[in-house]
Picture: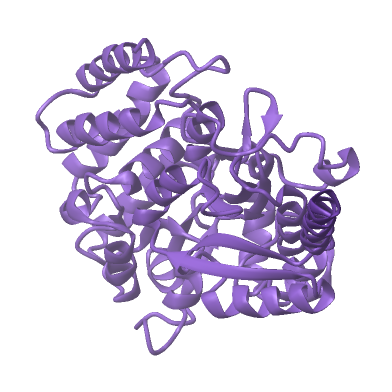
Length: 410
């Protein structure tokens, strides 16, 4: 009797386990996803896209969390291995660090070659490290040169500059005509914004901060030339001196008030500077690509701690799909090259789409090394010293070379 009782209990347990397993494997799955607040796609956009995904996949439930940029990296690091999140948004400079630490999954076998060939190279780079793919590109973003059409017209300038030397020449013309106190404004505060501008300018001068193997190349003469350009524009009063205190929103405020002819900023500024409620120069704003700009793209990754990696990838694929990106192109331009030929996308913002189509082929990443965080801090400190006249560009780049070599050898 006791034997039969034990057998029955074991049978009940087995059936229970199978039942639970079936429910879990059958798709009764809850995914926890971490997104950035105000990153191209608004919370409302992500919520609406997610509802449609859940409608098409009734056995998958998404719990989305939205955090400010400043908190994202730490949230990923503290929860990735514990399985706190299944899907996380990853900024381009974090990919190397997260991949090396094992925080995110290698998904190199998930993306088809024909799909990859239709994605902008910079977007692929934002989720790549050491020849492997650690996520799916999701957001395209970069910095453009914005210009005040009315000021250029008054200065007798027919076309915006195509490189930084032309920018300097046109700024001098505007300065000589006394059309604005300082023709150019930048986000050169001691922050990541400065590193983004520095990346765009150094790469436009042909420089790079690390080579393909990750070895520091900061003392390259081309990088010195780029920093010299930056300091020259300050010394010659072509750049607003408060630029060394400004972040991107400060730049938007100065440019939108008509106090500068040129500004380097992220894509979002175009619509806001052309909004009559936000700007005094609405309808007078132009946007132009530069020789090389900084890759501000973000991707979506599956965490190594996720127990539902297949479902997580399915959700990521939907978020980054052509259909979804086409329908939301007004807020965040697509990662897919082919969509830039579709009228629905072009009509969202013809000027921005035209500039983006060029610029997204000309992007440079901030150094894709696991020790980027430490390097970024040093770049901010050292470059600021030159901008404030405390040391020469040569001294700055030599100092950075030594510091980068020390950090990379830890």
